[in-house]
Amino acid sequence: MEYETIQLVKENRRGILTLNRPQAMNAMNDVMMKELADCLESLQNDAEIQVLIIRGEGKAFSAGGDIKAMVNPDAPMDMSLVMGDITRLAKNLYTLPMITIASVHGASAGLGFSLALGCDIVIAEENAKLAMNFIGIGLVPDGAGHFFLKERVGIPKAKQLIWSGKVMTGHEALSLGLIDEVVAEGKAFEHAEITATGILHAPVKAMIASKQILHTQNIHELERILSLEATSQVAMRKSTDHLEGIQAFVEKRKPSFKGE
Image 1 (cartoon, one colour):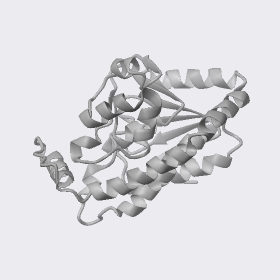
Image 2 (cartoon, helix red, strand yellow):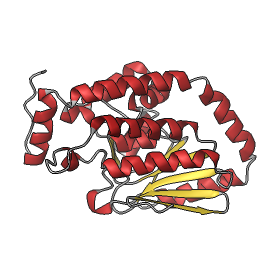
Image 3 (cartoon, one colour):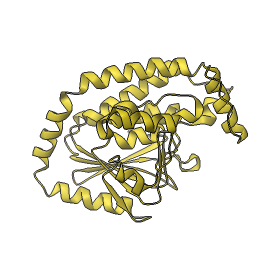
Image 4 (cartoon, one colour):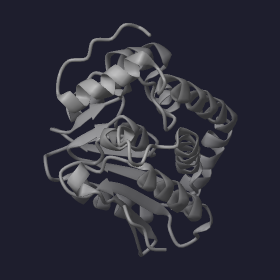
């Protein structure tokens, strides 16, 4: 299948899924969200692939949701469709019958960070900028960001990271247990390929079975969180704070939030 904003390459039991909007730091517009959801859904029954690497083209993994697209009056986002695609994206990522590896360089923010955290193994470069920074534009995490954060660091720390929108380096994220490995700048994808090769030389079928056993028990919780995220995000998109947040972003100034 041909895609406009992503690329999928398959070879020797591995797949490489590339976010391909480098001119926008791989920020996710509605087209990319739908294509990612469609692609991950199609991989559910793909017996060719046992390891999937997810990476970003250009200078970043993904800067998150495309804020410029959010404020485009000529093509306004249909939030019900967008949240449906984000829900499909996150659920299919979590339930993929293969080992997933995020190769993170540059920015991995917002929905881009949710995507990375949803992978089984997260490898980030030491100078990467990782943040669950929805709060900066008056939104809640989506893409199962609440679920993936809680899985990795627990509820108290997840709340702190969501509420602060803290931007972390690779080493800071590793120290919190958010990611699995830190590598030198420019080495994330190379290390992801080495990791994938090692997995493919291991009893990977048994590894995938263990993943499915561990993940299956959490699917109902994931679905509940995704539903709550979708409902909350639609509501937050109408809030005064969100409108102020995106306007301040566009104008490159500090937002003035009022809790409304």
